[in-house]
Image (tube, rainbow, N blue to C red; front, side):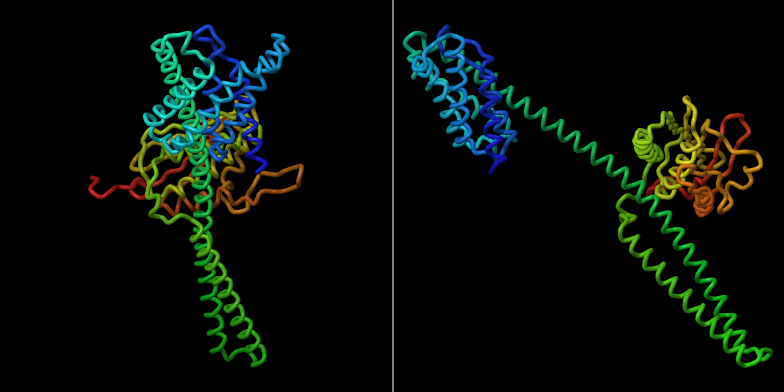
Length: 431
């Protein structure tokens, strides 16, 4: 209720002040103002406020402002000023009653009908004001009607144009926000997909460990070389180990199922183009660089734009590699360049940066689990050293490979090669 009162007061005050932008078409006290445009536009914008009540409050505000100006600026008595501007109050009340009766807010999706209703309401309310002012005695009807008709049509068209412009601008902003959120969701999903892959891989490893443990249990069970007590203890340990491993596997399986339920179904977004993957990653990292206040130039080039159904894994790999490249950059002219092209039936991604580089003695170790050169002196935190290992495993999962090229001084380049036959999506009927 308080908000509605505030909105009504806001409409009335804005209209009253905008009503001071006016002209006198007949050289009398009758004026045509911009206030009507403001009033109608705000009635559309604040779509929940009551029209008739707002028109009464607006009419009173217009009357009081004009009376006040005449009294203090033109030194006119209150009674004279009130009689002079009372017709303006009647105009707004009449205008509000007519557009409310015509349900003009519901007609907004039909611009022609909307303009006809506003124009009619404007003309009829102006005629009422002119009758109160006895204007028809002074001027000819044809001159009055043509002037009022033209002003009414122009004001109605301005209202429609203003509101459509603002509406489409709002839709554009909303669409842009949705696209940004969609791209962020894609990247998050890509990370989840890769984590699910590693969880499934761990489940296979656990399954193998459980089988080995159970095999040892069976071997010990058939053994006669140990005394009975030691044999029973070892057998018990092996059996318990098998049970524990099986429980861990079940827990992993529950996590995988839960994560897969959170992710979009694989058939919702069947494919993505490489250019779309690049656009998504570029938008995410552009905002990320703004947050961390790093001035790094991101360059994306696509020489062969293919469709792929493996976009989640490709996105996850590129995301990790670009993140590493950004973290290595420290110069004022830093850049990270990502290129995609075809070579020998392989889809090749080059991720190049001019950061601090990788020492020669470390190059053979970068893909080894646990190897890292990242250390945060502020927190004392050391990186896990699994980023490039995960990249290597994911690329091999797709039948590809990843390598490091550090031959050009000052440039670090990682090369990701993926088989065209595996990651390229061919629609039914494609040759």
